[in-house]
Length: 423
Figure 1: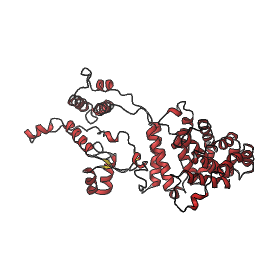
Figure 2 (figure 1 turned 180 degrees about the vertical axis):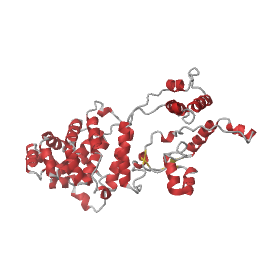
Figure 3 (figure 1 turned 90 degrees about the horizontal axis):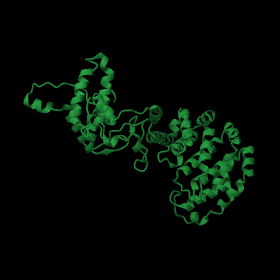
C-alpha cells in the first residue's frame, strides 16, 4: 500500500481492499459508510479527499475549461490526513482501536494471527523508537517563506502557491542537491494543511496500549495457533512494566499501559511453557514483583474492580500462579517473600472477587512446593482462605436457574468458595 500511487490520497486500508478484494468490493466501501476493524471510510472522508485534491489542482480546472490544451504543472500531492483516523493505529490490515473493541466486535475473524502478532511487535518497536517532531506553525511558515496574517494563517491558496514555487525549485529531478529542502517544504505544507496543526511528539501511550491489547486478544482467541512459538516481545514488555512501575504519576495517569502490559504477560505465560521459562530468564518475575508491590498498597475497602490497581494486581498474581508450575520459577518466587504476604492480604477483599479468586488459585499452586507452602502457612494463609468458605450459598445451584458469574455476585462467591476448599 505504501508504494501505491494512491497512497497519498487514500488510507492504507482502502488500498488493501482494492489490491486484495478487487474493484467491486472497493467501490462498495468507497461509496458506503464503514466503521469496522478492517475499514473506516465515510462520506465526510470522501468530501475531505475531493476538497484536498481540488485545492491542490488550484486554477487548473478553470484554465482547462477555457483551453483544452492547457498544461498541468505536476507536483506530487502531500498525503491527505483524515480527521476520523487521527487517533487510529493501522497494523497489518486492521485498525487496532476497533479490533480491541470487544463489545462492538467480539469475534472479528483474524485470518493470519501469527502475521498480525509479528506486525504488532514491529509496530511496537517503531512506536517506542518514534522521535517527536520539532515543527511548529512559525517554523512551517518560515520554511515556505510566509508570515501570519495578524492572528490568522495565510489562506490555503497562498500556502499552496508558496509550496508549488519552492517544490518546483528544489525537486530532486530538477535540483539533485535540493532533496533535503524539498522534504522540509513537503513537511511544512502537509503540516499547515492538516486540521489539528499538531504532530505526535514521541511514542504514543494510546498506540502502545492498543498494540498490547491486540496481542492479548490474539493469545486469548488463537492460543492453539501461537502455542508452538516462543513470544519474542518480552524485552520490550518487561521494559514497559519497569518504566510504568517507576512512573511517579502512575495512579494519576489516565493513559497508563501497565494493566495492558500485565494482562499480556499473563496470557503469554498461560499459553506456553516456553514463554514462562523465557520470562524468568529475562528477569520478568522481578519486574512483576516490583509492580505488584507498587500497586498492592493502594488496594483497600473502597477499591473498585475496574480500578487500575485492581487489574494490575489480578493479572500479576495470575502470572505468578501460572509460573509456579515450573520448578525454576518456584525457586525464584521463594526469594520474593513479600509476594506471599501480599497474596494473603489481598484475599480479604471479598468485594474484588476476581482478585480474590486469583490469589486463592495462586496459593493452591504455590502449596505444591514444600518451601512455598511453609511460607504461606507462616503468613497465615488459612485465616485468609477460611472466611470465603462461609460465603457459599447452596440454594443458588439447587434452584435450577442458570446464572452468570459476570452478572451474579453470589455465583462468583460460590466459585471462590469452591476454590478455597481446593486450596
